[in-house]
Length: 275
Image 1: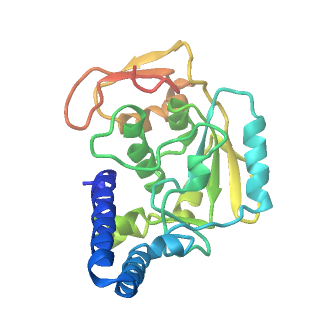
Image 2: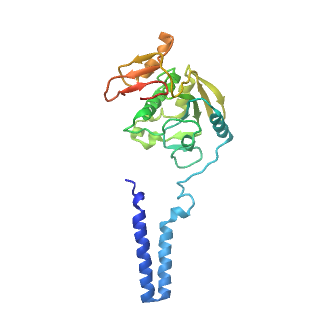
Image 3: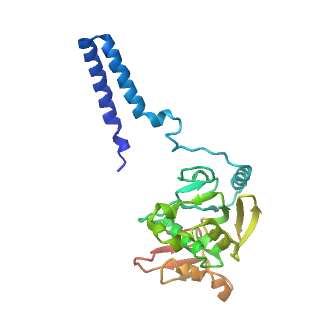
């Protein structure tokens, strides 16, 4: 479906054919007519290459400066020495920055100084990519007061919420047909959910960002002292996040032994994902 990989071959063929044609024209019709034809050919190529001549591919390549609050957040994250991820919200592409007309991939997430989660929801997702849509739905539906416990699964130690970035995921998918769902996919809903969590605390608040710290982050590798066997799908993790209210502590790992459409067959440990 991506034919630009093969454009090289017809481009070489066109270049050779044009050169041979001009040589034949010069030999038969003279230099003046050949010059006119050459100018016409160059003009056609210039029109065809118009997007390249604009300097920004006809507005598709956008630039914007990062403000001091983002530069400081970048420095703080880069200085951390612990083994953890950072979750940027919004995080589902395409994402549009304030004042930039065309949404696309988020350069902050792409170049995050700390590991982060995927920007896209893939139908054939495996491993941690399965966790992304589950986590997103949990946040939008405000299904738990212990989001930090779920974030431990992906080794997320901090969350940075931004209100000058907007996810266009609902507009780019058929989800836009369902207004009640699309209306929930907003930065305001995400922040209300994050503010309501018992295990997330605000560590920094700036003009456009709020940084939260996970009360009990886990590293990518950790020995599970309280494993639990679970029958169900990933939504069972929401119930497990409340285990500390009943048992005094939540399990370190959950194992899903069954295989069906909505379940995952793997060991699910904090920050260990599927093994």
